[in-house]
Image (cartoon, rainbow over all chains, first blue to last red; front, side, top):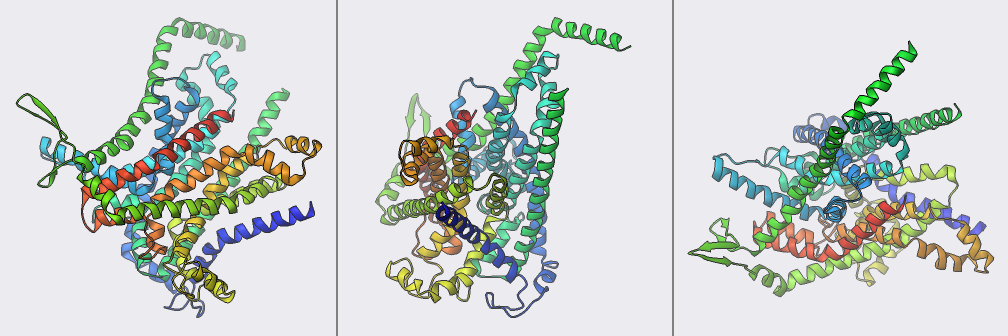
Amino acid sequence: MMMTRFVGRSWLTAGFIFLYQPIVALVLYSFNDSPIPNVWRGFTFDWYVRLASDDALLSALRLSLKIAFFSATAAVVLGTMAAFTLVKYKRFVGRTMFSGMVNAPLVMPDVIVGISLLLMLVAVERVTRDAFGVGFPDRGAFTIWLAHVLTGMAYATVVIQSRLRDLNPQLEEAAMDLGARPWEVFYLVTLPMISQSLLSAWLLTFTISLDDVVLSSFLNAPGSTTMPVVIFSRARLGLNPSVNAVATIIVLVVSIGVILASLMIVRNERKRARDMAEAARN
Amino acid sequence: MRAGLGAVRRSSRFQYGGVFMSRGKSSRAGRFAVIGVPYLWLIVFFLLPFLVILKISLSEMEGVAFGNLLTWKEGVMQLTLKFSNYLFIVQDELYFKTYLSSVRYAAVTTVICLAIGYPFAYFMARAERRFQPVLLMLVMLPFWTSFLLRVYAWKGLLSEHGWVYNVIVFLGLDHVLATGGLISAPGQLMNTSFSLSVGMVYTYLPFMILPLYANLSKMDLRLLEAAADLGANPWVAFWTVTVPLSKAGIIAGSMLVFIPCIGEYVIPELLGGPETLMIGRVMWDEFFSNNDWPIASTVAAVMVLLIIVPLAIFNKYEAEAQEGSR
């Protein structure tokens, strides 16, 4: 018994060290005062100062944030609908195909999604150019957005679906019995109860969009380069402390965001549990 | 006053009752929209693109455009399928080798992830209840920090003077790796099969841990007590009760690792070397460097064929896991 506990603790510790030490290294070497990466020469903020004037990276970051914001929003809307469909409607024509198509982008390699979406959009563009004289859609922010919504939707659906499934259906039925119309039930009863999962789904799809290299590379145009594509092209050439500095900022922002969000979720959950207990007592 | 409001409310309920027919209709329309919008979206942007690459891989080039598969000429309908791209890929040794090596890397990554991830998820699920949410968050947190940057970090760690490099060389493990053929020479860890595998295992480990943890934490521990009462020692109970019960988690986790690994591009590009063949990278080069769209489409179509069986298994278990947990 003691033995198992010891093995368990060591295994978990070793696993977490494995998971976290690259992040520690990224942060540490972003403060390294040396043009040769990996050799520690002393502490500096130099790389951060240089970032402020790194126009290529900053404009790519602006575009990335914009795309991430809009794709996360659309992915959560579509994901909510898909999750709702899978949880509430057990029978409709083509349900198996629907659930297959919802889940497939979770594992489908990005290169396949990227090339097939691009070639289809190119075909659409040719057809519209022949028909109207103007090709639509142009490659750029819009097409990257499309791809990000597609993969983001799969993640959003999984997150929202698991919450929706755990809901007590009696609450919605009660609202129905009290005369609420279906959309009123959704807005007044279902939506508040799944709001936290919507938030986590939004954050997750936002970060996935902000992290994507492959889809953006296929679907971008020369003028619309996203931040991961810029980082990737630099990382490909070798170690680059400016990449570490960007990484540190991302890690910091994301950790704070995730910790705040989970604190909020825990607090709301407690409050809900209290309210429920209160309601049960009365 | 209150009673009056109640009466109004009651009467309005009757009114709702009176328009019940139209309510039924609007709810049917609502249902249609809720199912239809995501369905249509997926068909147009997920399914249709596959048919487009399938078509491109099978069509004859007419100048810069692709010919139609079906043609209608003087009352004769003709279906033209050009298989030469597929023949080219099947006969070319490089493609065959690359597909084989992608499957091998993906399989090795899956096995290693399972070997590390199963005990990890198991100990997590058996840790004290109050620590579990924190442990879960610690597994998920790297998910949220850029995958690209974490892969990039390994480039530093495995290059000369990186601390993982130093530890491996200090322990003399690089000689072991070199004898095993995973690295070309002692002291050269980057751009090898070894660095590629480390990067893939690192990236996909959380994808293995999370479904396993979800499965193992739901297990009824009384079953183990029953096994013990019937005379099984903990080791036997683990293999005859815990492992078979976690089958769904094992399959879901393995597919979540195996399928995306096959087409992985970023990790081989950053951590792999010239001799670490991965099909995602070959397709990328056909598309971006050679501008050969038909061949790139064919490579992608064959990749889809390769993952379609694992994908079907994944979908089956994913659907079961989602429906069954109620």
